[in-house]
Length: 310
Length: 258
Image (cartoon, rainbow over all chains, first blue to last red; front, side):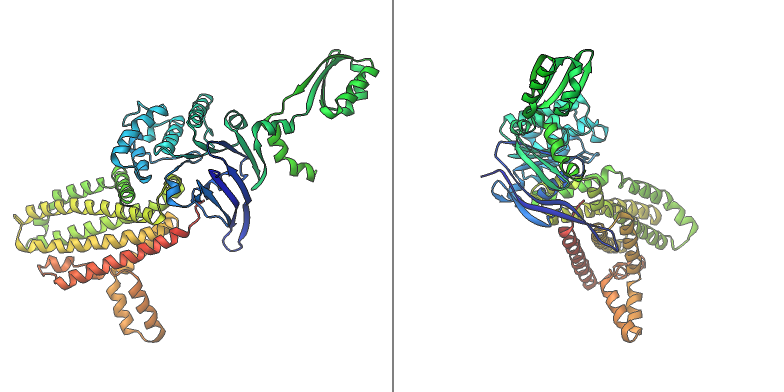
């Protein structure tokens, strides 16, 4: 049984007062996330990532479709006890201290007073806020607030975590710390569903990713498989710039430095390139297969439509 | 359910306390107590009457202003600042959120009223050189003011559940003014004919009747309030508040948050 099963989830927003216009924010999303998996939900700004999370969290209601979390309807209160949610750029009651905030959220999640007292200290320690005392949240830095956000999401020890852009707006050190935190939750076996447009974070943490663009799912799969989908290019370096005009049509890109030429070629064209270089007297220095990146896959999926239009 | 409701109630109360809403009452109490000797000097013989009218009307007005100012932001602020997102992702039902908010603000106003009542009685003690049997009647007037708060909180919460804070404040204050002249509206309805009669009668029944909850003048003149009126007003305020809060819940249950 998947931990999260999204079936045809769609959301249309109406805008305007007199003349209503509809905006399709999410189109029939189908997605499964397995238990214990760290799943990256990728897409550019406005792609539908936050809309999906809002629907799953019961913040807004789907126009069509449904979802199950841990085998139950996603709005079932029993399910809600087992999930934690960190919204994008979270804001918390700034008149509370971190322990007060966690106590409030733990109470809302159904934890008894003794359980709350037992968990608050260790959770604050875990997110690196063990020494904040009774300082009000209005005096916290952005990075500290993000850590409070993660603390409130895990205070009730949920099985599944939904994190919306958890590294957004953080400095490199803050990003590193949050990444470490997510890694440790992953190591504990939590199912983590996080949306991001920072691909290096997804590449470092995720088992699988999905790419969404303009409300539509463009691709989903294991990170390594997706990388290899967009791989298939090789870097060829040779000496003999005079051979370049004859082989330029086979190259994706090329750079000339003195007598040496560095060219990128699709693997399918590699043999033809090497043959022509031999014929034109080019002296081969090296051939290196290139590893595809998640960014390549992401760009391929989010620019598909533009390419077709062009 | 109880723990979630009490958590939301206490957090709403704590927010009001830490936003220093209640500090206005300290100012009020100090002003009232400090000005008490003046009443004796400027209004010989009717100093008690003036103090009761000014004091109780101030408790009512201060409370209503706080109810509107805090109430209009109860839901809107949580949506705007997205604090609601982390609440609704938990096993909190939307009606629990609304009812918890209602109880939290009412608790704030009741605590406010208690402090102001203490200040008022101190002023009364100083002005009239002691408390008398008739002064106990004033507690009924204060009880009715609290009933008025119950209804105002429900109304501001209703508007806050679907409107912006500014419009909520305008709607709530307009209803407070109309409700204060509720008896006049009923009298007008009784004198009218045809469609106007139906319309004004309908409006008179829908808007809160704050006029029937105002016994300040009566108690200031040492006239006792009947047990029947206390019972009727209690039932009226409870049922009216419950109906309006239910309306707020119905709206909020269907609301898509952006």
